[in-house]
Image: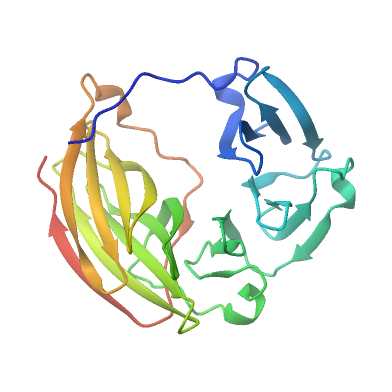
Length: 276
């Protein structure tokens, strides 16, 4: 049985309403903070100071949080279609390396040992260097709805990218994209989950568990549901691992900026009910 520990205060100089994302940095004891005010900070936790910062000029908008990559660089998306990459030594964000794509991007995800992965708004998933050629504009699935949360985790020989999309008021879809080093191909598996009446999934987090990936989903009634994902099985094992008391305020935490989710590669799907 999983249990929640005491809250940890990361920093005190940012107001919650200003935060877009907090992510791990390449340096131990540091985090990357992306703000809605179009600013990015590398923050040292020990002395509560920002050691690097960049800002985006007026008229541009950060649409994917800044991430740390294996190449000692940061990566983000501006105005949904411009992928920017820069190092900690680049003082001027305007001089960052830019790659333009013709389709809207939902988010860029990174994990150790792999190049950054792009999640497009139509549900297409691929590596940054391959997304232009692999995106054909017809990969979306009309049965899919909109992505509200996504994540990434790696195993010894594969990565898993998870995309959660809302279908109906109490129904959501988990699409997990798997890429294996030995086959160098993507496999897409889909499962649809039905929550109790008037309950929605509002957030997710995934982490490695040996050769599988554990996906933790937080429901609006306070239940934390665990799914064990595998590239060999579309229908994951699930269990409720925790319930947050007094969780009635969790009901409307979806981001208003929903995006389309789908897949264009071989996939299989299942549908199940969640009882909490």
